[in-house]
Amino acid sequence: MRFKQFSKKQKLALSWWTNPKYRSMDAIICDGAVRSGKTICMSMGFVSWAMTCFNGCSFAICGKTITSVRRNVFEPLATAMGAMGLTWIEKVSRNYIDINMSGRKNRFYLFGGRDESSASLIQGMTLAGILMDEVALMPRSFVEQAMARCSVPGSKMWFNCNPDNPYHWFYREWILKAQEKNALHLHFTMKDNPSLTPAIRKRYENLYSGVFYDRFILGKWTAASGVVYPMFSEATHTFDTAPECERFVVSCDYGTVNPSSFGLWGESGGVWYRLEEYYYDSRKEGVSRTDEEHYSGLERLIGDRTPDFIIVDPSAASFIECIRRHGKYHVRPAKNDVLSGIRRVGDALKSRSILISKDCTDCLREFSLYCWNEKSGGDIPVKENDHAMDDLRYFVSTVLNGSEDEFFVASVAR
Image 1 (cartoon, one colour):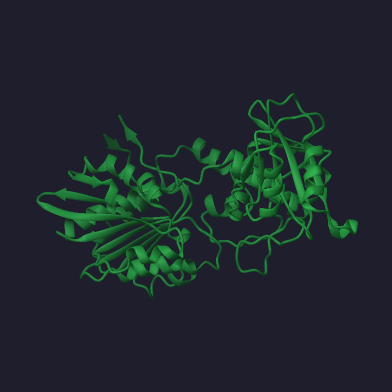
Image 2 (cartoon, rainbow, N blue to C red):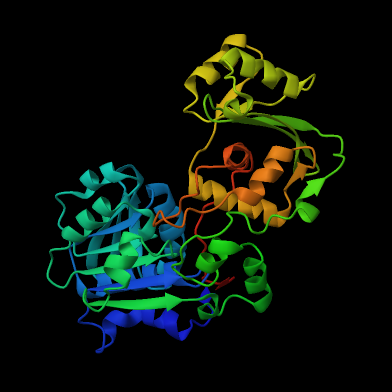
């Protein structure tokens, strides 16, 4: 097993702690584009530093979840550790790994920083160092609690992430203040990963547009602005007549005062077609509808088709109960992470894995009006003209379920 040649920036991420210019620093921050070589280089450097400088100490490797830590950090690292002369024993039930090298042994605990409650998991530990993979996805309380655990003399902190919005606390408190924090900041682009061919780089550039292109491809901490789906085009993403479909699903954004929007989706040849929609705006109509009246509209939308399930926002408890009480359709709660869902919809539009009937006039209208809230200081769409957009997002997130995985950049010859 051998790795392809590392770039200059990747080598620095691996070995900065040996460089007289940087070794007195307390931390390293690697941010930038996807597929740019951050994760594997930092994890190899982190373990090399820990095993060279310490013996009998504890360290933490942190990610959004323990599952993502094992997948994104430890699995590719395990491939490299044998070539680095390291042996290890993993205790899966205890979430730690004991690594040995030339008579030295250190313990590496795995932590997930999913939400604010995660800070209590790491509280009370004494650590010689931490590696935080995708630190921008973790709550500030967890990150700062982990940093507070690094009290062993010579301890260092290793951070990597893809960019978020420029108001994100980690960007403002660490990246903009890297010198003040005594931290080395390395900004990566795809060109910093020599394993990627120009064709592969071009493919990734074609995956994203708008704010996600700026962040994941250009590596910028940029604010969301303008329409949410600038890649949408009626000429590209609409159809007049759908093919015969093999499966059906309905997605529902339920409202009482706000509009209710239901979309009927049919799948054919790996593409999902929004065939018809039900859209009722009580403010516009001047009359509110009951759960039963909305359910009648749902039945009319479905007709004689048999959907696999009905996707409903989990907060619409009364409407979910209404559907279940009738016993005709199976209900599945929608995945409702807004920003991840928006990115997944953007990916689906780019790949043309979803298409919209020209008869779905309210969905098409909202595509042109659904905008980012530029005054919010974060990634929040304006809460107007978003009801068909919400049911669309529920469908894509729940059925297509685009991957959120980080990418790895080491190339291994076998």
